[in-house]
Length: 193
Image (cartoon, rainbow, N blue to C red; front, side, top):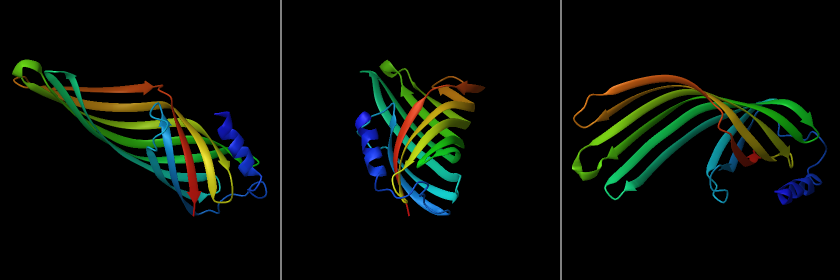
């Protein structure tokens, strides 16, 4: 971890004068990884639109598909997608480092199917969620067009509705509102064009 910050500090030497940032408006392409998760996999790709000097729009989307074998007789499959509009607001600036407040509003849909053992049937669950995310971030400008950043999303307010159905039974519906504190970290390298 310390070696990464050493690289950032070394790169800052050739970055140019303090305050050198991409002009607004501009478009940025980001690659990154998230934790928890596999740190060695690049699992995030984003397009950022720098609208003003202090605000960047960050559309977000993802598709997740999993299949698992719960036991030799029981299988489960899930398919989900997320779409959100995120924003990055600069609240502090020191040299080439920006302190950011992160926010996003979005929608998430999850469909899960399960097969029960011994051919007694199957079931499915569909969940739709509207959510608002909040977090903090740091962004280091390596040059006028390159940044490296660390984002931490710490709060999620969600309203979820779902239906669950099993073979031979009726559908059950549910609705809830939740405030979740499940921290996740994201590391990004961004090129502003």
